[in-house]
Length: 217
Image (cartoon, rainbow, N blue to C red; front, top):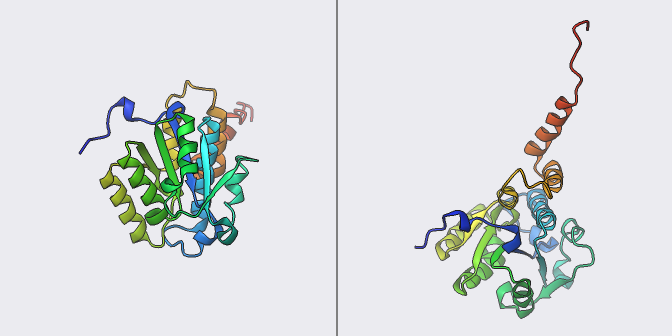
């Protein structure tokens, strides 16, 4: 096994490309590993983080005329962007998607989608076999059962995939608090999609802006 370690193994926004797969209404009908709210929230946060850090993002659906269009929370992040609709269950067998990824020139491939065990696992395993550096954002994915989600993650790790959550990814893209160019966008995403951390930050700002009581008071 080749271990993923060292500074160069960390994800960088300038080398990353994100593919969001099949975040569509019909996939929620048998989603049992997470609540629909959780998946929609996390996938949206991931999309916003990619936009904030200028990471090219490919949106793809499968038979949208029957399964529904991608959640508006995601497409609203990229207004007017084409969604590549497929018939292939395995996204990596669709040349339009693969060509779109290759056109970015990026080497760190990041994937999230529904379902983890099917529409995520297949392209991840194929792309790994073709030499891509692949990361799966597990909490922006979901499966038909908790078992299916966990087994799929184990299978992808065994194939060589890196796994992360959306907040870990955004933090890795930020990397240094001195990088202020995207800090405001990052904080806004936290406030909207990472309730505990985001609200704690809002509260901290409130406390810092609270006048200190005078001695007379």
